[in-house]
Length: 62
Image 1 (cartoon, one colour):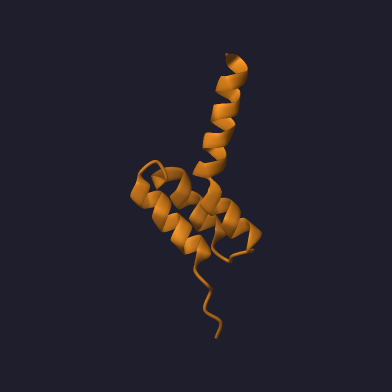
Image 2 (cartoon, one colour):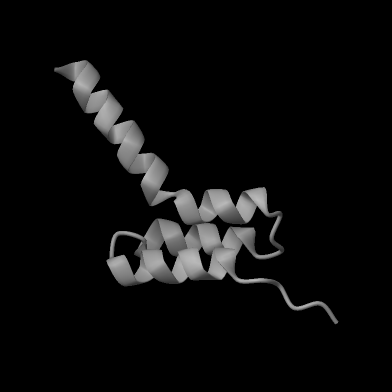
């Protein structure tokens, strides 16, 4: 039972922090802000989607 619980927590954590992982992998300049948004507002679906879109959006180069 404990193993199942640990696996479920690991899977949930992976999907919860998916926007941060994408931003970190893409080496975004605002990875810290995406992490903070994901950490504090990711529990709501809107906050998680905003963090995901922000992580996937292409950066503007000047």
